[in-house]
Amino acid sequence: MAEFIYQKPFPIKKDTTEYRLLTKDYVSTVEFDGRKILKVAPEALELLAKEAIADVSFYLRSAHLEKLRLILDDPEATDNDKFVAHTMLANQVIAAEGELPTCQDTGTAIVIGKKGEDVYTGANDALHLSKGVFDTYKDRNLRYSQVVPLSMLEEKNTGSNLPAQIDLYAEEGNKYEFMFITKGGGSGNKTFLYQQTKALLTEEALTNFVKEKIKDLGTSACPPYHLALVIGGTSAEATLATVKKASTGYFDHLPTEGNDGGQAFRDLEWEEKVLKICRESGIGAQFGGKYFVHDVRVIRLPRHAASCPVGLGVSCSADRNIKAKITEDGVFLEQLEKNPRRFLSERAPEMTPAVKIDLDRPMEEVLAELSKYPIKTRLSLSGTLIVARDIAHAQIKKMIDAGQPMPEYFKKHPVYYAGPAKTPKGMASGSFGPTTAGRMDSYVDAFQSLGGSMIMVAKGNRYKSVTDACKKHGGFYLGSIGGPAAILAKESIKSVEVLDFEELGMEAVRKIRVENFPAFIIVDDKGNDFFAQL
Image (cartoon, rainbow, N blue to C red; front, top):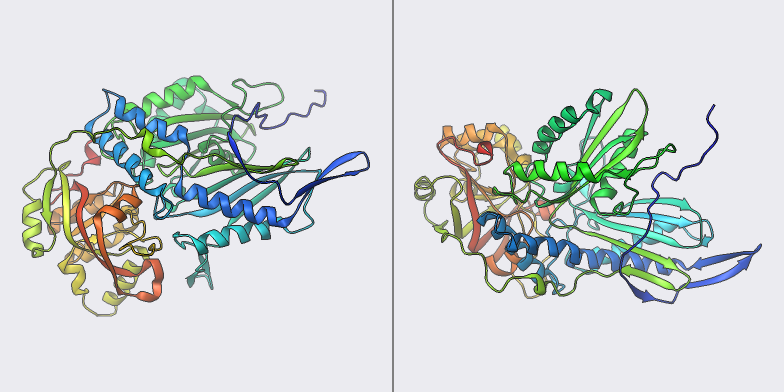
């Protein structure tokens, strides 16, 4: 029989985070039964959540921006890698002005809190944290993305971005620690659980597994990624919770070895192996190259002998994570980078000039022009785009199934898969980057057969059915850089008007006019797919 030993599951050794003081108000201490109790007024929770969600929507960590700058300085980085990195840094310069958020998908608000047993609030903490989240989404130029079910098949947008996901845990001590995350749908969709067995735990098997499964990530969640791979877990839920936290850097200061108690640890050797696999994949920062990931975290957990869950997930180019704490000294929030311009090189990377495409010519002429160029060709688009996402496509499909014609706007103009954030006063558009193309794959063949969706603009790789449809009907899929939504709004999008389905809010069909909108030919009319060649 083993002796009883309690092992803290995640023994984080230290916290090197730089914090800034928000306020010394709302906190006090009292003595009770020989213990120092930290009293936290509910207003502190509201203020903290409000400021955290605001900061993380417009600013990123210095460490993340440093990794983007490393791409620009790396002689082995491809031109496409450098183009993406430079654009993302330029995007962050604009976002840091505080009007246009880094990404148009301002995410699900996630709050992870560890509350010491000697912390007293006397309130429903989740309620007050939710109120702070609500205030920021109401007051700032962020997007409402949360939909709630009214029945199994009917949904509506809440118009507030609530509900937030709030997970609170009990700890020892008299401090309250937090991680705030705004998780976009694109990166959220790229969290995977694989139920494996002991057979995975060999050098060869695990290596082959990683090589195969990183392809599941693709580029639709906007690389370069911070990649998290978790091997083991006392349950599937524990594995996936660890993936999410590891991708934010939350577990960076775990031990680097296991023990008899089953402590979680980082495997630095496997982190280097997985990083090498990712760089040799050729996927790169969205359009081919070396920088599919910035870095990798591999966490090893205990497991049931009959089960070996494996989790894989990412924090995307909008690396929106911020730590916070409440102590007897006040309310503190992680210091994010307010001057991202210092990471931006003086000159943009030199590249072959982009091919200019006039989208306001007749569709047949635009298709004929695109047909002259091979995949990977960099384009500069100017003219009219129709904006439509998941729900709009479903509505149009419903109309067609009912015997109504394909809307003329879908025939006359290219379709841009996107959904904007709120428009700042005096601007033509809010942050307005591309959404994941794959969610519209099932519509492409049917729509193109009716003359619609002949040119599609979005982010990420797509199923072979789209390549087949484009070859059959003469269509194209153009890839835009996923992530830099603020720079697109400020420099490329000149006007926006709602065209159809106004009641769908951010999912409504819009008509926008763009100038010098960057894109690449990903799928052409000859059956070629850029990603299939990697």
